[in-house]
Amino acid sequence: MIATVHPAGGFLRTIARILLVVLALVGIALPALPAAVGTPSAAIDDVTARKIDELLALRAATPGARSKGELIDLLSSRFLGTPYGADLLIGSASQPEQLVIDMRRVDCFTYLDYVEALSRSTDRDQFVANLIETRYTDGRVEFQQRKHFFSDWSHTARIAATDTTAALGPAAVTVTKRLNAKADGGQYLPGLPLVDRDITYIPSGAVDETVIAELRTGDYIGAYADQPGLDVTHVGIFVMTPNGPVFRNASSLAANNKVVDSPFTDYVRSTPGIVVLRPQ
Image (cartoon, rainbow, N blue to C red; front, side, top):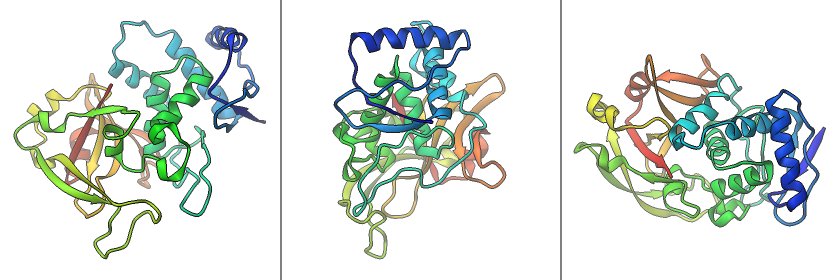
């Protein structure tokens, strides 16, 4: 069964959301809600609909005093074990953009999209609206407006996070990149403009205990790209656990191929460096 959900709704739909959360808390699942009028819609499969309900119920049961980082930790942990999927989003310069919401599998960027949107949502309509604002500049579901680069999260509206990399220590390095421009003169994403942007990163060799102590659970971490035209090659979430720091990520490695917690220091050593965005 596929349901269509829109990020809009009135009083009766709000009441329905409250009932849905209560029922979800006691283990009763409801089918996806009917469509409302207005903004872009998304076809949501039953598995994803149940997952959204589960996470919104968990969000509703979370004390208001919980920090944003702790909330991101809580929500992101429910994706552990979710299969990795590549090329999940649909749209290009020649193909109309579609609003994809599919939690049966995730890639590293859609994983962060979902967690960030869920952390700010209390019902399904709000989740869809927040996902659109997280994934697209100015909330316009278009290929040209999609936030294709990690640094877009701290540079384009709606701003989802603040780049705190430079504040992590004196080893921070800033490089001006022409995003989307390949070294051979081509483009990674045809149809998108080239964007000159300063990218700050901490070289992996400088990510020591002092730097790690400045990181917070819930920080979004990008693996710095040392090739032209890209800011990062992979993204995930920093989580401090009782057993030490981990990099929670949708891993495409053959040994994983799912959302996993990787030892943070081991992962950092495999990259040129890290870019750190702190959620707002």
